[in-house]
Image (cartoon, rainbow, N blue to C red; front, side):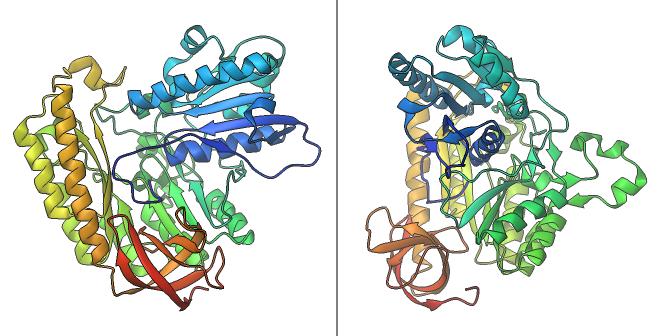
Amino acid sequence: MNGDHIIEEKKQGQALVTEHIKGNHKKLFIESYGCQMNLNDSEIVASILAKQGFNTTKRLEEADLVLVNTCSIRDKAEQTVRKRLQYYNKIKEINPSMKVGVLGCMAERLKAKFLEEEKIVDLVVGPDAYRDLPNLVEEVEAGRDAVNVILSKEETYGDVSPVRLNSNGVTAFVSITRGCDNMCTFCVVPFTRGRERSRDPKSILKEIQELADKNFKEVTLLGQNVDSYLWYGGGLKKDFSKASEIAQATAVNFAQLLDMCAIAFPKMRFRFSTSNPQDMTLDVIHTMAKHNNICKYIHLPVQSGSTRMLEKMNRQHTREEYIELVDNIYKIIPDIALSQDMIAGFCGETEEDHQQTLSLMEYVKYDFGFMFAYSERPGTLAEKRMEDDVPLEIKKRRLAEIIDLQQEHSLYRTKQHVGNIEEVLIEGTSKKSDAHWKGRNTQNTVVVFPKENYKIGDFVNVNIEDCTSTTLIGKAVGYSENQ
C-alpha cells in the first residue's frame, strides 16, 4: 500500500472514470474499494468492457451498468459495500433499467448467495472471471442473473492493457502476481483470490513500455506477495518443482524482475507492494541499493511483535527473524523507509503479546503504518479453529496505543528529512492549497511546496523546511537530474 501517510485505514470507494471512447454508447459506473490490486482489477474490467461498447461515467444516475469492486479483508469493508448497494437501490428506482454487479473478493466469498442476500444485485463476478464479463452482461441484459466465481490456476490478465482510471498521468500500477499461498489464519485472500501465479516478465515490460510512451513517470509493481514472484513459463508457484530443468534454470524471480525493470526504464521510478517478510530475500534489497530509480521504501507487514502470536497467525517467521531482516535492510540501505501492517487483539493475545508489539515498533520506528483491530473473517482458519476472545474494549485500547506510538514514530521520521534537499515527483495539487503541489520523495513521504512554474510529472529538488507527522513542507530549488 502506498500514497499519503496513513495511520489508520480510511479507504473510500472511488468512482472510476476514463476518457470517452468514440463509438461507445453504453455507460459504466465502476467503484472500487480496498487494496491497490482491486483498483488495478477495475482498470482491467474497464478495458474489457470498453471493447463491448462501454464508456465510464461519474454520474451514477445515468449508468446502464454499475459495478462495485469489493474487499473482504475486514467486516467493516463488507458492511460499507452493503450500505453502498442500498444507495444503488434508491438510484435504481429512478433508473429501473440499470443493472448492478458485484466484483472482487466479496463476490468470490459469497458467490450466488449474494443474489439472495442483496436483491438489487444482477451480476456476481470473482477476480479470475473478468474475461467472462461480456457473456455475463449479455445474460443480465436478457433478464437472467449471472454468476462466475471460478478461481483460475493460470489467469494473470497479462495480455489485457488496463484502462487507466482517474489517472494523474504520472503514476500507475502494474500487476505482476495474483493469489497467495501463505494461508495466514486471519486472512481470507487465499480463498478469494486463489493460489499464487506469476505473470510473464515480457508482458510486464510491455505494459511498462506503454506507460513510458504515454509519459508516465512512476510504476508500482503489485501483488498480494510480490517477493514470491517466480516466472518459469506459467502455472502455479507451488508446481515449480515439477517444471523441467530448463524451465527451472531460466526462471525469473522478483529480484531479477526488479533489476530488469530498472535497467530497461532508467527514467522511470519503481515501487512495489506488498512484501511478505518470510519471502523477502536480501537479493531484493541489494537490487534496490544498486538502482537509483528503485524507491527506498518497503511495506513490510508484520501483524504482531509476539512470536507466539505470529505462530498462531501462521506467519512463518519469528520476531527475531523479522528483526534480523530489518537490521539487514537498514544496513544495506540506511535511509530506507519501512511501513507496517499491525493487528490488535488477535485470538488469544495477552497483554504481554501486545507489549511485545509496542516494543517491536520502538525498535523499528516505522515511517508509517496500517493498523486495525482484529476482525474475524468467515472461512478463515482462525474463524474455524480459534476463539475471538479478546474483548472489543481491549482491542480498541490496544489499537489506540499502537496508533499513538506510530504517530510518534512518524513524526520522528519526518523530522529527519528537515534540512535535506530531496527529489520529489509532482503528482498533483495539494488537497489543502491550490497554490501548492504535492508529490512524494523516494521514501514515499508526501511533500508539499509552492507551485511556481513547475508542472505535474516534473521531478524537482525540494528543500525540506518543516514537517508534520505525515507531510514534509518545503520549497523547490530546481529540477532534478531525472527531469
